[in-house]
Image (cartoon, rainbow, N blue to C red; front, side, top):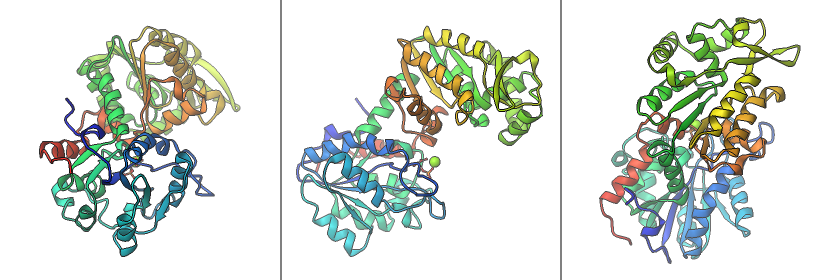
Length: 411
Ligand code: 3PG
Ligand code: MG
């Protein structure tokens, strides 16, 4: 039995539903058009189910942060939803004024409107508890107009923000299908993984990675951890390898001396479960050149794992029961250095393992390589996934659990 309600726990016919989603999308820098609408696609099962069941739905969401270049209104998002639904969707450029309240009151059953970017409210992003947020104007004004609150914003579930946790204190609340799916997929990897369980951790967030590696080996979630990308370089450095000036300079930006010390201890403690690259690819005159780790340091930057490492790692992946991958193995923006990431993904998708990938760059890479749909599950989480990986509670999930334990009857 789940600790929170899902769409199965309510009768939605004729009910007015406030649906909080995470459709915060990457935008094109110049045109500000939505560049990747995956997060919008992923909320469609929940939206379609609510509409089919006869609910009147108002979508509450954010895009960017006030002051940032990608902070834009949600009319473009409403258009994508409209395209995916195959019918018009009204965008209401208001949240708490008469326009918004009238629009909410007049939603026909089976229809949806999109409200204004919720980060327009100065207090939206305040980090407060569910009870504190439930007293804010957003919650006190909108709650009386809604019967049920549905949260499908897994990507923002690490934020204890007003629209994400405040309503659960007042309204009967449920997790949407995406939230359910994300937690189920991650639960399968982290609670009961088919063995051997192989984690491939890459990217540049070295400090976080040290903690994640420590946790997944310490808690016996992972049998093997393959470390690649900038993080792989950092672990090589922690093992005493001198990388050369260009790579060391890049690393200096990503890690503190404390992180490096923590990685050294981790290698001593749990090194038997950690697999690092044997060879790497450096960039010489805009070309890829594979060299052994023993041939470092070099005056050329290390931008990918080498071909022998790819081969060896692929064999480990081929025998896995579970594969979890987060973070690229190399600089995927430069074609020759996308090889490691692509081949490790190919190995994962060709294996019989249950495969989950996550993190913005990783999902985008899978899409670029045409492998997105070959994984068992692709998480929409970036920061939320990191929080989950570290074993920290997700405030939105905690609020949904609290709402269920209040045993609010279905309205
Ligand atoms: C995200 O993309 O990380 C989520 O939508 C949360 O947004 P934030 O990082 O701006 O809080
Ligand atoms: Mg973020």
